[in-house]
Image (tube, rainbow, N blue to C red; front, side):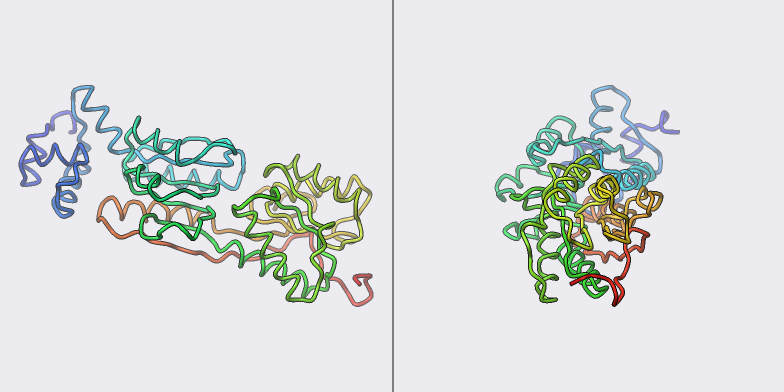
Length: 346
């Protein structure tokens, strides 16, 4: 059907002028939301694609959403990307997936991508967003920050976000660990100067310890170079060479925790009889590790779905920016146990 439809037909079906359809196709701002929605509805109904190659390129760009992922190898993002892709496909949008290295500036990459590919919106997955507002305004399209640490200095009216409260969720799980009888609780974070989600999780960990009257011992804090199993293994190994008189190890990501499990075993300790291990994120691999990993489970699929919905409401209905915060929950696993009264936990 789309092959028999042209821009004149689209204008006639929508009850608007050809120039109005052209402005909608080129994403011009001088079209009312109601008219834009009507024209886009006709375009979607007839799966219209302009015939000549130059216009076709613009059409594809118009129907694209860029997804920038910082921490691409982290399996926590894999099912989220899958959800985003399927939902965009259902809405007849293309997903432009862009991997970011840890040292890349996500906003610089996004600005370049928007200029080159002209996606209609951007979803940022992972990372730390600490940017001046005048630079953010250069992006020029609606965007959603998902599972990202967002600086309080950024005006919340200029962006949308879908997150958990990393500080609160870390506090809750360490509070649970303390109430389970553990007093000497070690932790592995990302790196000391980090100000992203790892920082918030470590701060939640420290606050919970203090509220239970436990010392925050810097000798029990170590930092990994990245969110990976190898980093978790090497960091836990260094920690155990320095101190091994702790009963629980809290890790700011599941990948770090899975690497730490091997390091603890290699050092001759039993899990959880000697040392309990708790991760954060809730990746599927943790359910199948030996022992299975106790962790903070994020609702990744729901967050991915809502990220698309929030962005589409911005694009289609010109809705205001929205900020969603989801609850996480503690997923029980074999790597954690409560300490009994007779255990040496003092």
